[in-house]
Amino acid sequence: MKIMKNIIEFKNVSYIYMPGTPFEKVALNNINLEIQKNEFVGVMGHTGSGKTTFAQMLNGILKPASGTVIIDEVDITNKNTKTKDLCFKVGLVMQFPEYQLFEETVHKDISFGPKNMGLNDIQINLRVERAIKFVGLDEKILSKSPFELSGGQKRRVAIAGVIAMEPKILVLDEPTAGLDPLARDEILNQIKFLKDETQTTVIFVSHSMEEISKFCEKVIVMNNGKIVLNEKLQDIFSKTEFLESIGLSVPQITKIVNGLKKNGMNLNNKIYEIPQIAQEIKKNLKKSEG
Amino acid sequence: MNIIEVKNLRFSYSKDEKDEVIKGIDLNIEHGEFISIIGRNGSGKSTLAGLLSALIMPDHGEIYINGINTKDESKNFDLRQTIGVIFQNPDNQLVSTIVEDDVAFALENLGVEPKEMENRIACALKSVDMLDYLKHSTHMLSGGQKQKIAIAGILAMNPSILVMDEPTAMLDPIGRKNLIETIKKLNEKENKTIILVTHHMSEAIYAKRIFVLNEGKKIIEGTPKEVFSNVEKIKKIGLDVPQPTELIHELNKYEFNLKCDILTVEECVNELTKIFKENK
Image 1 (cartoon, rainbow over the protein chains, first blue to last red):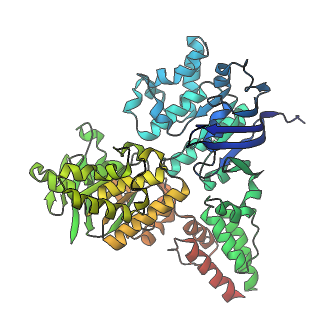
Image 2 (cartoon, each protein chain N blue to C red; image 1 turned 30 degrees about the vertical axis):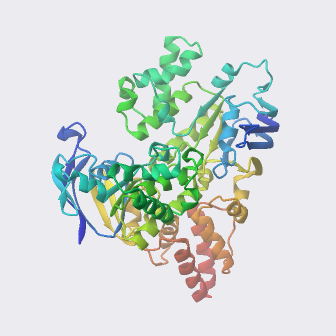
Image 3 (cartoon, chains in turn purple, orange; image 1 turned 90 degrees about the horizontal axis):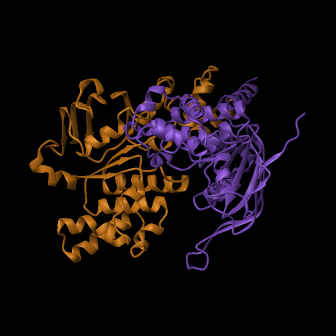
């Protein structure tokens, strides 16, 4: 039995945008949190709840106004900690990352991270090839300019650029916005595979409870800069009224289950996959037949 | 009357037939219709939206908007006032720092009288429920609010057609719901013809008709109920059906014979409850 270690710890962390101005806004309000190695954690919350601030704090882009952030046993809020090392340890895929592609070729763009880590050319090439395959693109694309690619391809190249650094923690801030349903599932399946193969810890910020329910084991819900729920995935579906009250949308399928229960069906509200739910409904319909 | 007619439309960015992204599309859209276009990334949706808004010109075939061929450059000015276009990214579509100025932008270019301009700005902002924000600065608005201001800027020109290319892609669920309500209202109350390109099936169901594109061709066309009852076909090309439709489809595998044209949560709950109570 392996001992579970916390790879991320937040202790009383707060962050304020534009302090001392009329626009002052508390983005994170006394956050306490522990995430274990190799977990796949979903972070939900409506716009302005502090999700993105939280994500950016994980790799040191933002430093807390107060409190302590410990990543992989290093206190990153300590002034003597080098932020550069953190950038390699925590890979952050920001919203609409395709806008951040800048090099002449896809190969150069993906190499940017590994190069800055000080790897040699052989190691860099190896990582670039691995990363491009991982995101489901053909190696032929490496010699193209990133600007010749379609939106979906650009998104994959941007994710490959982060994965090539082989970070211990992968933070994805709404990585699937604007992708079609199949592309969404493909990218998230690949990330799930990466998590299982390499023991990576994944933090996945999303508006979509549908997506979170397909891939995450744990869910953190944020509201007004605070963590209001921190639960196992199956426990979140029985709290739909609360989620709606803080402006989150629950999956249609969950609304159907709630509606049917109200009308007298006997259904387990910890399930969230359509085939499972169909099974349960079937039992209700069949039972009453006899 | 058809406000948009598309005949044998073909288009490629490289002008090489091998690279065609639109491979022979015919469409008719009536005045005041609400149309959704769905399809995978790269299926030609955005290109079609660009062609319909006369931002790009067909290689082959014709597009008539209100009887005007989009290739007729002498009528370009009329066309621009007939069609308004909204894109994905709200930040790329605002030009001024104050809401009022942003909505006024096109009107100033059209040389509208100041008194008339005030009226039109107020009307446009009222249509998208943003009149209270007249004097606000644009960069402090949320994504959904920005998108509404972009729409208001277009409404001020009083176009009869609104082409929207994934206008909700960058919005959160509340912003998205709100924007869809606004779009529905513009269609129902102001009789605007709406063409909505989207990846969200839960948005597409509000259209009167849906066109499904795949590899540059229109492969399915019909009402949302007709389109989404093809669960297998829709899934095969990599798209989703609304969850209520999928649940019913799943249950019908057990020979329940439920109505297969169910799209909303309410319809689904009602249908299942009816059978549940009948069997009791």
